[in-house]
Image (tube, rainbow, N blue to C red):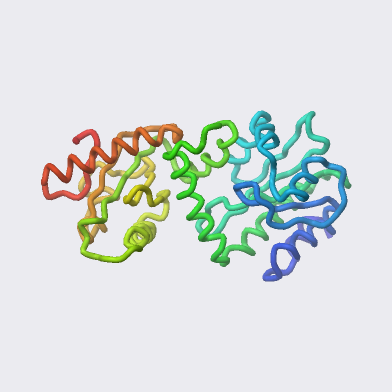
Length: 301
């Protein structure tokens, strides 16, 4: 039986560690899983002389020096842009490796699975079989609430770090920020939502309306920031007409007395602060204009 069929025949519902250990028995190479913050999740307990592997296993993460190396070799960018697998080769790596992206049920990248070619050479069917293992683990975590919550919080955290200027080395953080582009096309817009005119009370009002909007617009990226619900929207959606995705009949803004300002278009997420400020300007000018509308565009502010 070939490796692909062996992977396909692995049992489901037995957990990540079972799948990693079974993968090691099939491939005869060490396999590790870490999240999108480079924090160790699980690994096969085998001995290897690969220094990058040993750093991750011994410390639980990668040093900033190692992260800078990944970026300089374009691994960070390649992984961020890949739907499935990336083969990582470099004269500075002792061994080649294969990496696959693991997604949660909302199709947000939440982890990476990596196999190191340190104990046995990769064969012609290795990539196909390893992709099947990545799919197995993606299915294994599909109903895990932890990874669903992690994906949502990930967007919030990265958006907040950009706006607060905590991300200063764009080379290192390219991969983290790139995840915000997943599912988007062409240009982006920032929308900020003011929930204060709604009569609902309670400390969790922002979270409540964020979740309500998330259900209505699952492809947007969300954060709660500075008293607003913030949404990043792709230009592939029609947002400029009254019947567009943010308008139309029974839209959540009219229904819930929510007011929204939308920025001009942009491409570079590292410029998010500029367009966030545009959205705030559109929102404040729109409310002050008292036009009776709920959605205000920066170009019309």
